[in-house]
Image (tube, rainbow, N blue to C red; front, side):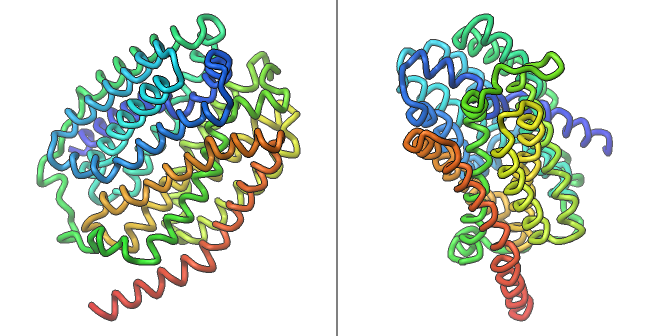
Length: 407
């Protein structure tokens, strides 16, 4: 049985990797799409925001559906929708169609797979749910590093339409093959060993100031990371490093590949650190790390080696929000309604996509500089690091003490 759950983990990670490209290689398509449709960067980035918003807004609903439909069926549906989104977007003749196909279908499809895989793996690892969720998030964060260089190559060779079509088919084929191996665990394997689940239902959680503090903090952190994710290509072009090479490799796809590695590794890494040294302390350290990385990146972005290495450090300080916040939320409000509670908190990424996508692009366009955009991101990181220790920690301590005394 032990080997069975690791096979399920491997299949789940491959499903997550297969559908990660729509979010993490979007920036490679933006120059060609901008030229094709003759639109501003802010208008184009609405596509990316739709992808993230729809991926997150429906996550509570998808979490509920996962309890009523076989996970493998649900995940297969999501994979097909995700692949179809790229194949359909390849024939888009207007920005509105790009919104619908790439943003709309892509967001719904990737959200279904993300929630389905996380829900399934948490059943297979009842005593290590944090590790399972972190591993799933790592697969999603690192998956696109396998496609970054191939997509960059074929974009230069074919253009964006054939590239979307071909890789949409590949994405669906790989994901469906991996999903065929997924299954639900036997009841005796998935049951909890510590008795019935305890904690609070989502309606109660949404009434607490503590939840909304975490929502604000996750939104602020999501904004800075998604600003870089969605506009890395534009940033690289503006700083003159996009077409430079390092050891024979183009700086932009090399930076994106390193970013995917850092973005994946940081999730289980900081989750493990927070288990030992505390959630809020780890948040403060990681968020400060991102602020310092952004500051150094901005000051040395014209140098290709610094651009690549520091962009990876930025993601090392950002991606852990997908392990730290769900762990902190479940520590606080229990496991009774954990999937729906995290579904509500996960919507913070959708808000961050709007702030870090079109609004950041608009600020750059209005100021003709990346400095105001980076300044907002750095200030947000510092504020969130401060709130982790000055507000979140004492509020959680009081909440848990009141809960203990009332029980």
